[in-house]
Image (cartoon, protein in one colour):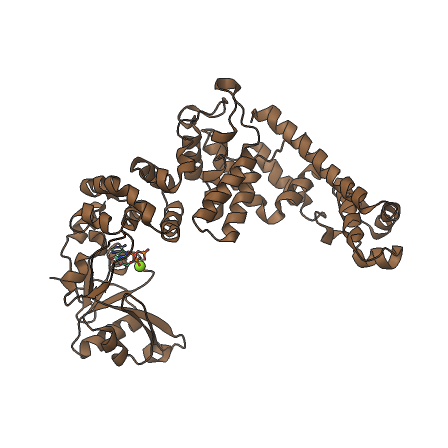
Length: 496
Ligand code: ATP
Ligand code: MG
């Protein structure tokens, strides 16, 4: 045991209170795991874990306001704000009884939870040395640190090292493999040699881990300061081919075109570089940067400079959807990411695409998604090795979007609505109303000066004579013609 004086840790009052309460009844109370690691790194812990030799029933007895007890024996205790500092907010503090984990026959969950008598045993079941440090508050600012696995030394040397036999530890719970890589990229630590070779050896065992648990670690890797490094570690350790085989498929697929410079010439390298350069901190944008060309291996026709990747954005949208659904991402994240993948080829050129063209892009993608799509484009460009992220063209596009952002791009913004069609022109309620409005919108997108009630009524008068199917065709054809034009331009410019 090691005593440290005057370590100015900011441990909240209510945590100190709970620990004191346990000690008053002659139980031990230690802070353990992530919070101790974060304190020693000078970071603010996200959550506070208290470990004790008190059994769950003792904890419940001491804290009658306990709210739950999970299957690992963690008891959630309710602490009322006024008990601490006259604050009205009630917080839940988790207290966990010392435990050891017995056999993991399915490599996924411990078969049973076994309580332990000593802190020593509890620390021995933790994953990494930096997560196996315990801390006790002796007096006000004096703490006692229990560090049986030299976690402080590893913190100093920036090393992720398994507690005990690395091979055994990853064999017990393969999620620790993902955690090792996550901590490595979140803190910028290296993975100690034996730990790394045990990771390689046990990578296959990740097949037994639930997609949700893998996803949670994957998300932390993607949102870390070094997501590309994380993907490379996953790849080198043989993990990527298990959790994201679709990305692995791009490893030997050459990009054809000259605008993918030297080191970015395979689909895989380009995607990793795009993730690295992604200017956004949003999960869905980073995912889209990483997945935007995921359709290329399948879409590729021909070889060398003449290879083409037609429709790779649509193939990619489908593959991205499969991946995100398999990893149980929320529908919101999945939809947003796939929208960005599908539209990442949007075309803009200063003199070629006018205001109506920009309005159609905005209509298709949604004004709220434009800046994220631009971020994907910036990632794509930088990930191709071009020096400038935001060329004049992209800035001009931003300017044009701003300019047209008040113009109508959805039927809601038309100065004529369904009720007007019924009252002024006697159109019967039914599908015809929507069809007429769709045609009117397509005309207003071409020319916003038409968005005046009287003009729209004039236009609608003509349209009421047409059948619903014909109206729909009219609106669709406008969109299709516009899409054809855009696709033609994309193909001409990019050979994709
Ligand atoms: P975070 O900052 O993400 O909360 P953490 O290290 O606190 O990181 P938690 O999942 O909150 O991670 O777990 C708390 C502690 O429990 C860890 O620090 C570690 O000691 C232990 N632990 C968590 N998961 C495992 C595991 N799969 N195997 C062994 N020990 C684990
Ligand atoms: Mg934690």
